[in-house]
Amino acid sequence: MLRHFTEGVTGYDRIAQVCGVPVGTVRSRLNQARAKLAEALDATAATTHSDTRLRTEASWEEARHTLSAAEAGEFGKLLKECWSTDVTLMSGATRMGGAAILERVMNGDLAAGVRQRPINVAAGHSLTVWEMDILNPADNPAHCPPSVAWIMTLRGGRVAQLRLFHPARLRRTAVPPELREVWPHELV
Image (cartoon, rainbow, N blue to C red):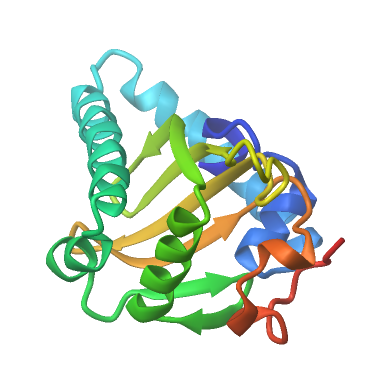
């Protein structure tokens, strides 16, 4: 999905970084996937894929609702009601934390005046990707990178794992203080 249905997470190196696997593994898996995809497309060319269209439309609405809830101070409530009870924030192969850290990071960005706007959604049965523009406050235009991709692994229709990927490199000041010592990404 990342390679073919996102706009900012398509390169082998970026996919490897997001998934926490070697670049060679990404190349190998994509070659295998390309062959399987060709077979699947041939087998389903005559049928419609309305379920994917409906899933994607619903995910666009979910992205907007999630951001609205966050801006209204209800991100923690939304996490409890709509996401898996054991949701995990991942960075590559490293577990960063659970719902508490997600809420703390979101609330910190909002308090700093940062907003997000969905620009692309790719939704499947077990994986959903929301690509967002990041809108920084006028008084701190470099607070966060200009974009982020939310790569969400689903279990039972709920987000069980979230990986945040910034196509642009992070600045040390953009990483929340509690993550600065453990964040594995290269910092400016």
